[in-house]
Image (cartoon, rainbow, N blue to C red; front, top):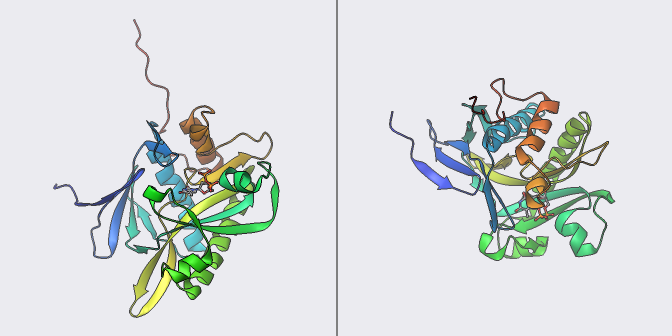
Length: 253
Ligand code: TYD
């Protein structure tokens, strides 16, 4: 069978043309990058885990009426998604201080925030995805005021769902990033969750021990990234039956 046409290749995923107009196939790679791709590695099994975890979170959201681009998982590394026009913003929701917020405001990592805080970064790797205010977003036409209100509401609903599901398995959701896409039903535009929801774009801390179970393990060299993601998948009960992260076979003399 001829390979599908590649539409886009990013740092962690590839998009191929889908079987029907308005659909795409999203392929999860094993590549890990951090610090705007200054740090890179290949983590065996990461793509398989993120495909499953993103399926898990997006299916849950779809079932609650929070619309996402996810349609169905096709195989270990691929899922069928709705094609969207991606809004050029990273929408970040924070429950606890970490990462750039902790640095920017001099907060100790792990400080609980008075309420969830939604931030926007402009998606541009050459600028390092800078933090932007609503004023910039509207003035430069990246989204309208109505879109912004809808995006904040969507992001907070995702936060409520994710926080609850993860809390149930002993994991604190410190922060996460989503991307949002536009779809049209005739003339009517809707905003839906796009891209992926996985430990690559969340901060997940074990509630008992504080162990990091997200991409900070890679960013900060804290151990084996696939082990951490496997732990999240195991707790959520979404580990594929044909395991992803088995030790490499050893030669027997
Ligand atoms: P943030 O603390 O702003 O940045 P960094 O991860 O560089 O310390 O990130 C907040 C959350 O959003 C964190 O879980 C990582 C995620 N995120 C991404 O996945 N991609 C991005 O481009 C950005 C800016 C954040």
